[in-house]
Length: 182
Image 1 (cartoon, rainbow, N blue to C red):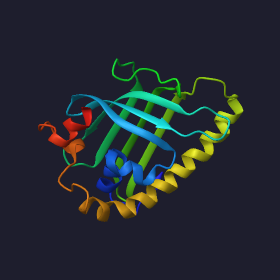
Image 2: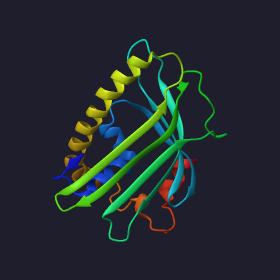
Image 3: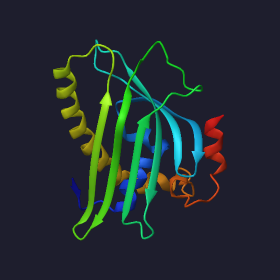
Image 4: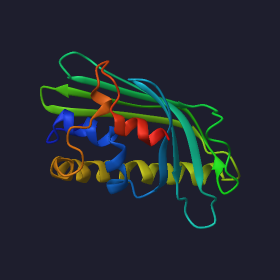
């Protein structure tokens, strides 16, 4: 998807910034860090509100990210894992991300976003409902992302502007990030 009018670094930060996610992800119920593996890999918990009559879903995902030296290419990937610090919650159906990823590229025309998500939603949901919901959800996520990108630079000025642990390039993870684990 071409997002020519959005700077590549802003789009990347919007996707990566866990504090800002609450500002634009309307389906998110909760998210938190479970364990920091290294400066480019973490295990996180994420849950979503599902439509009426469908049980809410949650995931525990290992997420890794990489970017090239000139920051013209960013890759974010995740897949589900089990973790002792994130046991199954009886109030949710534990879904599974088999593979999910973002590829954000700077092109001559602007920024290009490629997104894919292969999930097992588990529980009882007819396939046709999953397919229909996924189609509309992805479209809405893109609309929400675009809107969020216009608000993020100003928001970030007032919300720990120096903290971008996802851009650590091997540096020590910030103390506030460590506190999220506790």
